[in-house]
Length: 366
Length: 252
Ligand SMILES: Nc1ncnc2c1ncn2[C@@H]1O[C@H](COP(=O)(O)OP(=O)(O)O)[C@@H](O)[C@H]1O
Ligand SMILES: [Mg+2]
Image (cartoon, rainbow over all chains, first blue to last red):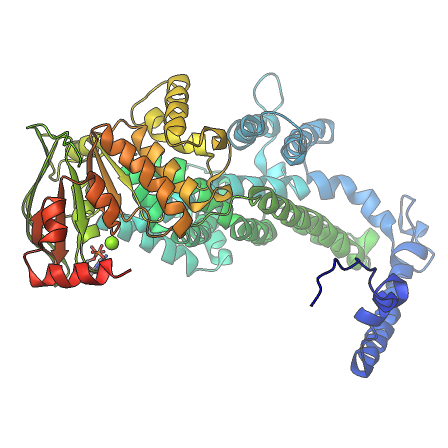
């Protein structure tokens, strides 16, 4: 047989273009075509009125419910309450403080996400270690001439973010320590960690929060008051660190034994081995699990409303009770859902971005 | 054929070494003395305890009875001694075990910087020198996953040498490699042997054994069955078990 170089041809026309795409993905055989039409019908009959309600028939400007006459969503309600949704009862003249804290946080996160910015490691450490301290003094005040704002005034999205950020920043290192402890050769360390993890994992967060707010004070001497927010933060952090520990343990188990042995053979000590060799590889594998835990934590923060803290959901519920605005709870729940979704979706996207970035071209797992 | 570098100083001593995995007696009364500069090749059927024996020397495995003395340091419960021995003993594994998240250069400078507290500049200069010796200085900034098996194993050798070890342990360094890459790794090992390194190699590369070994050790069932200089070992094996093993291995 004679060998000759074959020409490269374009794909047949039924595979390309809009028609090709429709054919291949939506009308590929009679069953698919029927399914496409049925699903399409329901989607349209649901989406059209919803979009109409949210965007077209809705009212956006005004100062009272009298402005809502179009029959659609009454966003005037949200607009009038926006400050409460965002800051709770934080004094209006001091709103710039949570705003500044938020801007610093978002700014450093954008810094970390953008591909070209220098000194990412330094920024990450500042964000995880220094930022929480700055944010605390900024929000609480009582230093540098900032008036004090008691934590019971904190609320809305600000409080939700405080709970989530503190929970995330504190539960990760605690989770790492617990996971390492669970792997330890020392029986006492190991059993303490296992017990801790299993107790917290076996209790619903609601119970933890009740215990933190009702039972914890019983163990303290009389008259010693202990900030309610702080108690909730401790409860959430301990609860989440148990989950984090299990995610991290999974990642550690995926690292081949040879990596531990090579580090041992080179004379690295236990902490050097863990910090320089094992953790960097394990964290890479754990990113999806860790972010899942973060997302769960972020949403779980809304449970604090049952111990009387006014996170964004609690603020929404309070607003719904306002006699001037009765009947607009759909709008407030939708708005709250949107807020949660924006943050959770961003976290999810960021984790995908990190995963992609960290998995470039060096996947040797021997 | 090969001129020995052996001095009188004992580098590794195993005395009545015994080890169990649970009930399983994996090493039985192993006695072995390795002098400074000596090259020992260890062979034997799979499961005979070769890896376990050399992994005891740097305490990757714990032994239950007998003594191990490396470079005059007794290997015991004292963590200081274990650390000291690991600084003196380099090890090369079958599956390389490079750190995949670090570049070749970072793999090489990690232990010198963190264990020996060497300044980074100095560690990098030394690493580049050693990468040149294993003939891959141009790969220094790549990640292990981007290299071939033979290149990875040479990096692993360089990484061990960066700690300036007195003894090198090799556990089947070429058996995970494609045939065309075996030679490049053996060449590096032969060069190392010619420079006078004390070496214990578990390998079935009999050509290598004939070229560099001062002694060949045959293990079976957790025991040292036979021990001889290479010429005698290959041409005049004493035990039936050794003869059988050699006939199987030399067939190919
Ligand atoms: N961690 C372990 N637990 C139990 N048995 C083991 C373990 N490692 C090795 N063994 C057993 O010990 C014996 C010797 O193993 P090894 O030293 O790896 O042999 P070789 O390297 O000569 O092939 C084998 O029978 C193996 O199954
Ligand atoms: Mg082996």
